[in-house]
Structure formats: C-alpha cells, structure tokens
Length: 184
Image (cartoon, rainbow, N blue to C red; front, side):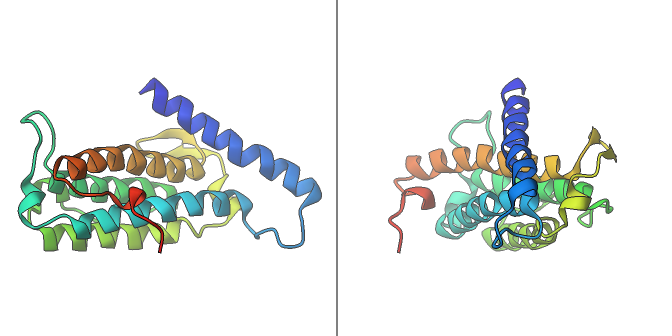
C-alpha cells in the first residue's frame, strides 16, 4: 500500500509541477485543462489494454484461476468495473450509479465485457472535468481530504496494477497481451 501511495504522490507531483510552470509560460497549443489532460492519455492507454484483453480471452478462460487464492480472470474484470465506478463517481461528486457487485454477480464473458465497457464509458466523463473541479481540495466520502484528480490517478494506478495480473493470466494461457502486441 505504501508503494501505491508513493506512486500516486509522484504522479500528482509530475502533473502539478509542470502545470504550475506551464501556467507561467503556457504555449499557445496547451490544453485548456492541462492537469486532467495529462492524466487522460494514461487512462486511455490502460483502458485500451484492458478492453482488448477482455475481448481476447476466451469464454472458457473467464473462469481461469492460476491458484485457488487469487481471482479468476472474469473476477478481475468485474473488480476493475466495480472500482472504476467507485473512483470516478467519487471524483465527480456523484452517487455510484452501479449498485451491483459486478465481481460477484457477473460470470459470463458477455456480461463482464458489457460491465467493463460501461464503467469506462462512465469514467470517460470524469477524465473530461475541468482542472478547477479536479484540483479543488475537498472531503470526498470514503477517501478523506483530497483533490478529485488524485482519484483519477488512483484509478489509472489501480487499473495498471490489475492489468499486470491480466498479463500473467494471458501469458499462462499462451496469449500475447495487448501491451506486447505489435502496433498496427
């Protein structure tokens, strides 16, 4: 957990330090909301990897579990969908729109792909918020005092962490994960 906290802090600093410098000497082509715009490419990249992985894995392997102590592939996809709704609804200051525990209630590839796609569609809106909204220090239910941007960064870090699990599952099954596939 300490590693995740340090990683988030470093990500926040890497976003905020250039933003402060850019505010003084912003080039004409700078985005209107540079802090959120800096997080968006990371989100888009991991989103692509997770969605491609979910599509690539066979129906039968959604129940694959390397050992009894870890989640199945499908449970990882459900877990990611659950937490994306949590992080993004909290960042947006909204009630979580997904009441189901996707990880526990959805087991088919079709249902889990639908759920992960819907969670990304919901989060897309959070990654479009203004810097003013994203960097406003506030108390966020369940997360304490922080800026909503930290939840967007936490979402990307969490997705990245579990994509690492997905890569391992795919490699065990003899598959090439999206991040290792040649660019087209």
